Length: 307
Image (cartoon, rainbow, N blue to C red; front, side, top):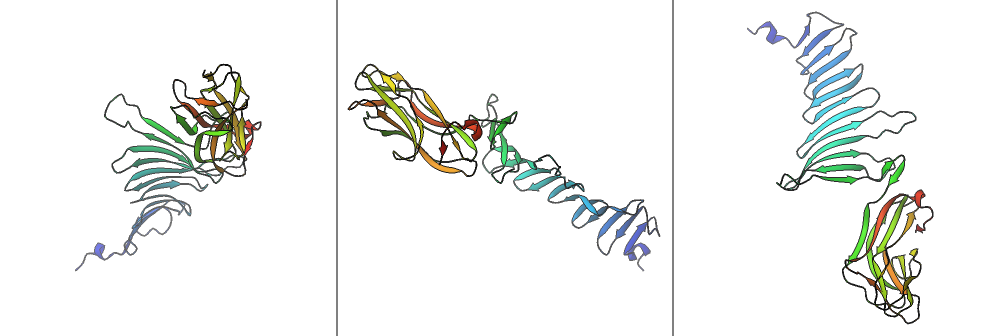
């Protein structure tokens, strides 16, 4: 004959309690429920995991996928486990008068590659999320430093965007061919310039002329020789033939806040003396042309708008 305990389908502790603090072992549904003195369910263990409750709201769950802890305001912290990463996801509650970002801390690993720790925030304007990824040293030497990769729209100080990131560049160790009429001497590949950003153009390092007493002029155009002019230098005096004269130049342009612009940019050179040739010189290093992200577009309202 089976024992009385073996025949039980549901057991309440203390025995016979129907309200207030109690534990219910429910064999039919395969769960254990714990109630507090206010007769509220505060904890449940069942086939889906371990649950905690605040009134009618589930505030915590522990299962094979991880752990989630939340409250009635909508804030939560979640630990997610899957085969190739562990992720801590944080979502604060919305607050009137403030903008709160949700975000995550992710430990990533790649087959045959590095392990990384990433800090991620969601987008505030529908664009890409910003994140910082920290890699370990790339080799066994103890003096090798870690690598820190930042993927954010802008880093800000006192509300102002901090620019400086190099976004496109072209270098050449050899001098350009001599040109008379305006000609392309360096080209930047296609790039998506971000809406609401300002950009800085940098050119260098030298120029020379095949004839004394002439002037050279650099321009930056969109796409080709017929494209929009984004920079137009003053004349650079070349007093003696064949001598390299410093031409470290720069300008700024902006992108309208309404939309990104995808374009290639070209650096052109021409002479201001009829029939004379001018050359973009590498001098003792390389000749170069590059673009830096310089911050918010409103900080560069004096520059032309890429269109």
